[in-house]
Length: 169
Image (cartoon, rainbow, N blue to C red; front, side, top):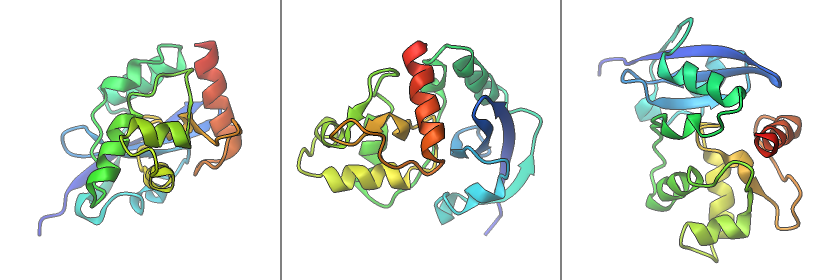
């Protein structure tokens, strides 16, 4: 089996370093608020992993993040994402999550309903937890039923900053 090269870039943000790992055709395979691309490899499905190469920028992906940070909250919407879940619901739930608008967070219950399975609240939460492409698949836009933040792989201060940035947008 031939090894795939994955390109990575780390971008400074107001809430700390944000690293993106993209496949050979530029689709985001993982992203998160960490300075270390290697920290993201375990989030990528084994079939999509490869050798990491650090880059100064990733063209449209880097521009989309910069535009998002500058206030164009829709800039990240068109960036291609490539994740593999092993299940139809999870893949569908990630697609649905990309449709949740900035500044309009939903609850886990609301997210499950948007994904077409209103009773599948735990499955919706699992889709958020297993999402490798933070920001591009905006799991930070999902809140607990009581409106509190809930969990976030990259920490609640980051989630709070992202939601505040999107409210101000």
